[in-house]
Length: 542
Image (tube, rainbow, N blue to C red; front, side):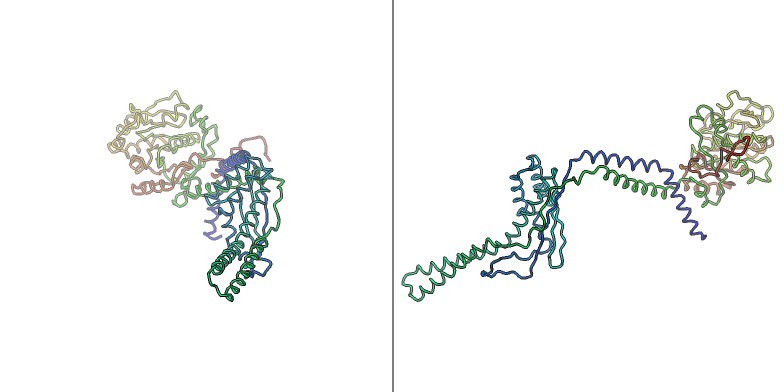
């Protein structure tokens, strides 16, 4: 497999995990939208639709011979019928016919008339729609669709609209006859005026009389032809009464809305997943060039409240994950006796203090002596972490005749310090009251001498420091540590923030050996595949 193919596979797997993680939200959005659409659709009035069809027979020539028995309207240009339907020439006669229509309830008649008048002003018909299937010559079929709230109203509206369009089309042919009538009437008046002149020669009078008779004949003929005028349009199929409403259809609308909601929610989640630069898997940290030492599952808040972090970690079975961290960390420190390890993070609340405590508990349970130094002098939390686990506490001298019981005092007087025994093989030096100028303490103290003195008594020294991006304290302490472990929080720590912290650590000469992804969501299965079901038992489980 090529590197490009592996990259595509990784991107797809990240996208799939993002979709699976937010699957309840996606399904919930789709179901909510479907439910709202269903309820809204059920609340809508019932709408029936009826259709009537007209056939258009355009001709390229127009027969205007008065001797012809038929006068046809001129051909219809493209779009003329649709434009006529949205004009007062069609809508006004239609509304007048609707007001006198029988079989339609009065309230429905008024509603349809009001709707047509409003749509005419807006030039956007919705109660009536017109579709056409025409050839290049304009011959074809026009289909009128009428919508109303009763079946009979829909049928009559379609037929009345068809009649209104036929009358408009026939009126175009009548315009030619009316112009001809007006011309003959003007000629007849002129001849009558000439005949009324005095001293008119007999021959000229006879000529005018003959002309007048011819004009009168033509005028009568045009009047007779008015009854035989034909338009381009004619009825193909009248409307019938619909049996079923076309809307609302709550179930169909709900399904469509649900599918649309599902697609939209999936698209939004996919976009958020692509734009999400927070750390969720080891793959997110590969670009930084350092290994991931462990992925630590999230503890339930209820267990932490009732049992404390250390005891809750034991009950939750985090020792499988801590075991990976312990093995990987000691492997990175192979050949280093009595190592000093700085536990750092990028920003506050990523869980470095609880991780330090559970790591110390894991090391202590394996028989190694561990000293925890709470070096976060502004917001020290190790005392609170161990309080519920060991409320008694047993102070003992760290070196000489101790008296200093906080990190600040012990750093300034390393030969006279006491530590709190929080459990077997684990001692802790609390930070004490919060200090505003914590960096001044580290600058005044001989950190190298203090750590060299204290490490002789322990197999491992763990330093819980302030976040690297929040304070410079961790950079000062890390210069005297044998290794630095960077803690990142699942779904919260940004990759760019980790990169910035690593740049600071590199400039200060810190030896960062790897990362820990803390508070991981075990449901995604993105850790090392810890199996908490693999417990001691009396036989093989199939």
